[in-house]
Image (cartoon, rainbow, N blue to C red; front, top):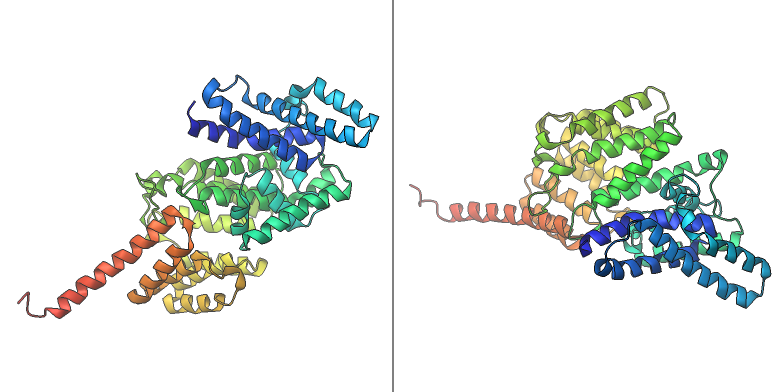
Length: 426
């Protein structure tokens, strides 16, 4: 197995291994360190010696040994015989952790990380780190906060869990319901990072988006009657259905308007629409269902020009009442521009300029560039495309934005050349 495949496998197994180790040892900080050591060991050994027959069990056993060493050190320091007895039990059966619960370790880990000792925002950040494998910078990007702020938040979350005295464990049915809002938001953010990576050379991280879909299916199996769980799964499927058309042969970004809709996954679209229809029929409409409905309107348009923008705008108006998320407002500005004209959309962007959460975010500039181009202000559009390109850390997005700026600049040069030579073509 080559290095790239090894990294992909380790990324896929990491949350499952961490869930198994945490379930057994009940110490998040130590378990996370132990699993990281096991992943490093695997990344060095597997490319040289080959992947073991049961890679998950291998990682669990190595991480368990690290935890045993850690607990042995703690026991020596604290001189507690009870801890020694627990340590001996853990050494005896490390590989059994893989199948002890008969449940999905990664899903258990999601619920475990949404800990009652944490605020919702801290629980989500911790889970994104443990389950999604996101870096602190990627999590900060999703939250529209500086990386240093997010690092402090994650550190405080670990400390709060440690100080609470409440062990990580499988939640009861009642606890599951209380943690559900945070769990769904975590899965939503993991999917978003996978669908459009916040940085790096690839537009999409398939491992993250597919894992988010898999875990959301598992939550839906647990709670089949919850309309927002169904709404989130529908949103993911309806969005992911366009994945194959989003990039070109060289990994370049292809905008929604320019995509070849013939390669959209019609099976996923049908499943997403069916889930959404059943959820909406229950009469309790939430934000995920509304976002799924917007995705469905896009997916059901045979051509970009057939998109029912008035319906999308109406859905965003409903969504606006439920959320003050600035990204919702930004997308609403696009819908307003498509229905009422670019000036109306640009006016909404001017209002968003004062929202500190979007300060310096490339998407605000990218949307402004698009609307300025629609309005015929090519000079302003070029400047905004270039500003957006400078601010994004995603290479495919940067290349796309610079290409749009170059396209408009070339067109402006051609027009200028013709105007400077009025008699050339007579």
